[in-house]
Amino acid sequence: MDNSIKAFKFISILEAISFLVLLLIAMPLKYIWEMPEMVRIVGMAHGILFVLYVMGAYWMYEKLNWSFKTLMIVVLCSILPFGPFYADKKYLPA
Image (cartoon, rainbow, N blue to C red; front, side):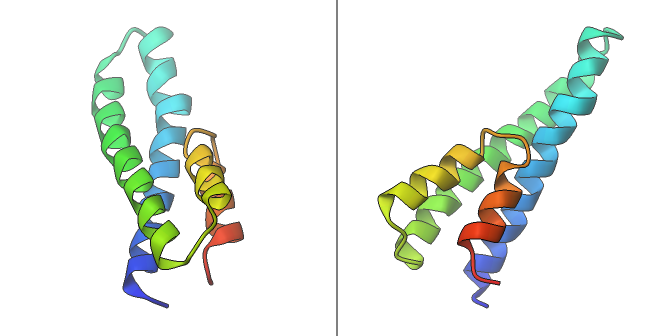
């Protein structure tokens, strides 16, 4: 497997995990226990990973000759919990 595909898979996994940590740990800490520090830290990491994920999706669009529809599905997966895991299994070579 090409190193660029491996890199995108790695970013995809990190982006998905950061989103889940943000939703399931950081947000409850902020709104239930009034501890907003975690949202700032995890939110910034997730934001950077989200941008890298979208850029990587475009990179895979060009590299793997995806249709525009596939690109849009993969990008849409970035805003759904567990979505990047689905995109990884469905659209990236093993």
